[in-house]
Image 1 (cartoon, protein in one colour):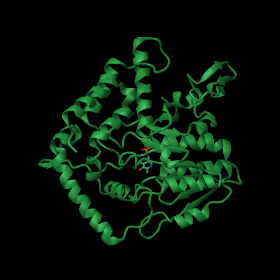
Image 2 (cartoon, rainbow, N blue to C red):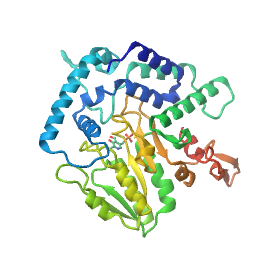
Image 3 (cartoon, rainbow, N blue to C red):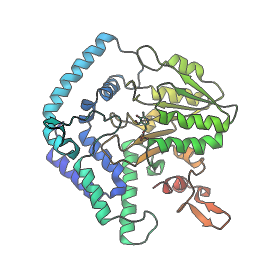
Length: 368
Ligand SMILES: Cc1ncc(COP(=O)(O)O)c(C=O)c1O
C-alpha cells in the first residue's frame, strides 16, 4: 500500500484540524497509515493479523502445512508490501527509531503489541494543541474551550465510525483499556451481579481483563469460571459453551490474544452469551490495531481498546457500549459536569435524563 500524496495531505489536514482531545482519532488516522508496519514489526501480532485475515471469526485450527504455507505467503506479502510501502520514508516519521542503541547499532523496535511508537505528526499535533487550543472541555464559553470541545466530539465521532458504532454517544473515553474494563466492572457489574451469579473468562486473558473481574467477584460474591485453551493454542470452545449456565451473568473474552495471537470467535460467543441471558465484554486491545472491528457485526455489549498500541498518544483509550446498556449503568466517578443540581449533601446526576444523548454523559464527561 503506497502512502499516496493525496492521502498524506488529507492526513496532515485532518491532523491540523483536530485538537489534542482528538488524539485517539489521530491515532486511528496514523494507524490507518502505518497499519502494514505493525504486523511486520511484531511476530505475535503478525500471527494474529494472519489468522484474522484467514479465519475471520473462525476457530477451526489450521493444519500445520496450511499454517506454514500461510506464513510463507505472509512473508512474501510482507516483502512485497515493504517495497510498496517505502519503509524508509515511513521509518523517518518515527523520531524514536532514529537512534542507535549503542554506537553503530540502530534501534529495532519490536514491542508494538505492548505499545507502539508515535509518528512525528502525532507528536506535532500534541504540541500544537497544548500551544494553541488547550482549555476546559464542555465547561467554557470562550473560543479555546469551544475549539477543544469540538475536537473531543470530532474524535468521538471518528472513533465511533472506526468501530461502526450506532453513534458517538456509544463511545466513552477512558485513560486506557484497563480503565474501560474497570468502569464496566464497577458500574454495571456492581449493580447487577450477586452471589448466585457467574462470570465466564478464558485463561488467555490479559491481567487487565482478569483482575477487575476477580475484584467484582470478591465484592459481589459471584463465581469466576475459566475456559482453557486447546493444545494448538486456540480457545476450547466446547468447554466455553459447557461452562455457560442460566447463572452466567457476564462473559469477557479477548478478540485477539496478546499471548497466543489467536483470534477468538466473538460473534459466536456473544450469541451464546445472550442465549443464556448474559452480557459480553470484548477486550479488543490487540484486534483494533490489526484488523477491521465492527461492533455491530460482533454483537457484544461492550468493547475496549487503547490508543497507545496504535501509534496514538499514551493516556487515552475507549469503551464502546451499546446505548441501552450504557443507559442502564450507574455513573463510575463522581465529579464536575455530571450533575443537574448539586447541594452540599447530595447531587442530582445527569444519568436521570432518559434521552440517549444525555444518558451516557456522566460516564463520559467525567472521564475526559
Ligand atoms: C489483550 C490486552 N488487554 C488489555 C491490555 C491493557 O491495555 P491498556 O494498557 O490500554 O490498559 C493489553 C496491554 O498489553 C492487552 O494486550
